[in-house]
Length: 403
Image (cartoon, rainbow, N blue to C red; front, side, top):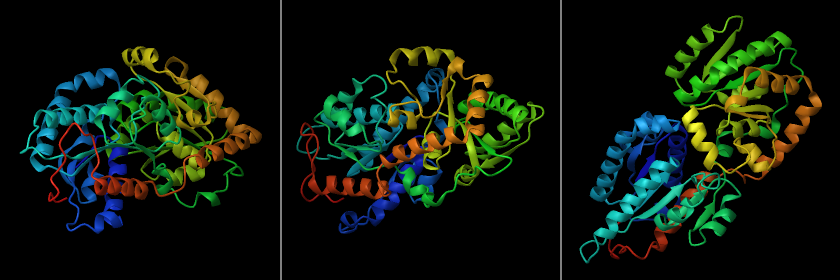
């Protein structure tokens, strides 16, 4: 059983399913693996039986989460009931940390309440992609350790962090799935000779992020265009976001831009500089060696709560991994068109500065491990199933239980 609640997690989960189907440890079993759960179109395309499309409910910001709280509670109850009805051997929660931790805790509580000789179902619970507990509320690490049998990490520093904060939790660093999606990057030549440079605008994959980031990006782009010749390309995750982006762009006079649905790799190959929200896309910019100006804006309520609990100095992942501000980073009120345009113009016009940034990005990318994250994650899950290990406070399956 898999649960993925956002487009990025949906893709990671689909890649994991394909890797599990190829894993020798799974293939050697008497029965072929069966997959079901909750996710999105990519899991469905991978042949997973979906009970609901969780990606429809991907939201950002505290207020948006609160508005959807009733729906999330109903989905949680339905998925716990589904797990108890179908009794999977392993439940893999992919990203979507807030929901998945609550789901796994609820399932663990149900198992503890149904102890006895006739209640011998003991699924293994796996979290693939760590919640960012190292950035805020580190006490959640203990709850993760009490709930999951295995955590699959995609960031190199997380294993040591969990060893300090939750030493009883098995953690395996499998590498970052992005490295499998973007191949042949060693042959990329920086597009520094183009007389009209391309600037990539990457506002985010959710509607709330698009509305928060694209308007300020567009005004910054117009300021850049007033200073130097440049072309602008926007990459979005779907038709609905693209339609909304066109409406926003129409209100920004004097600016022409190309809007792409997917195709991020091609745009980054052409881009000299990017303006990007501080999500996973900044790591994709790093993979392509694109100097980037990072930003994040959210509702005042969400920001005021976040600034009290977030303990890390940087939000953009390349900056976190480097321990320094490799990408200029502007958060909330600092993310003004003036600041974004000024930082972007430095990168556009200073070849030495771009070279320095690219050198630091190469170090960041090297720390992520090589390709094969999905294959390593599948192998770790296969080993967990073959060992039959898990929390000892819940009865394990009888020897004859079939996978």
